[in-house]
Length: 271
Image (tube, rainbow, N blue to C red; front, side):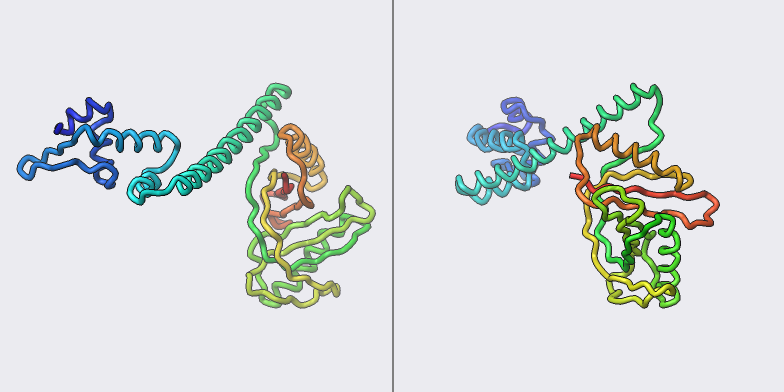
């Protein structure tokens, strides 16, 4: 038998790792001297240690390795576990490749403009929301503001407090300012099942909007300059080889009288 230091030299594994494997029950010593506390190992343990190292190199966690070694998994079970690990690693590689593509896109933008881009665009998960919404076909997009005011004029007096900023969903497959299919969504609590009609006689629909991965941009400034933000997000989507996978949204993060000025968040669901 070998003391732990000697065994460490033979197997070329640090003593600290051998102690850790022992504490986890993966590779306990053959014996421990009750007087000195020295741990002793034998050469017959090397195949088990090598299997631990091989499985660890495949990306398996020590808990997963313990399950394999201690439960004597069948070949089919081990194959299934490794296939799950393969899928997990493939997803991680795909995410890193997508991140690398975004870095390369940002570098191209900086190099072409010779400065930092005006807008910061990020890809993020937008949570699902329970909303009270108003939907109409408008012949003038200037009416969006009055629709929002009309919605708040019904919800708040009824004691229905929005749980977040309201946002507009543009349902048209193309930009159509003379007949725009517009929905104004007010996030509300999950228990809200109905809402009273608005002062202008509009009817609320109560529905759930599913979550989505979206390209998100924050535009700070007058709404009449927001077209610049749409151009920026369109260029970003093209540069990152993403396609729009749902109607875009505009979330209004500040009140009209906020001293900081209008702040609008654009959200483009992507695939």
